[in-house]
Image (cartoon, rainbow, N blue to C red; front, side, top):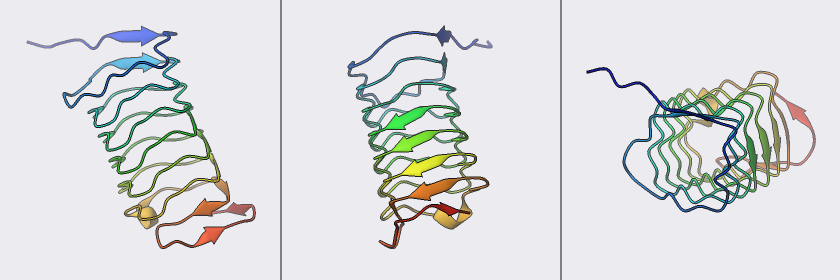
Length: 151
């Protein structure tokens, strides 16, 4: 039996705790998830395009092949998150914690990374960084890029 995905558009779930481990296979477009706790949640193949994830806790979340295009990830916690093959194009990262994140084959293009912590992140060299600008970026080996830099 084919199950259709639910589509939630322009929904507000700010400051909610949905810390789960079961897969969430839905489509969330332009949803306000600011301040939400999604620690350990399984968002494999989920579409979160345009979501506001400001101050969200996505630590240790599984975001494999998730579509996070045009999201706001300001002060978001993605430490230990699995972002393998995730689509993070035209995303606003600012003061984001991506320490220990798995980034194998992720796409982070046309994006601004400001004061983002990627210390201990894995497979940073496998990321498609086309058109991405960084400043104050802490790389996987602890190196800090303090000035504007284009890949």
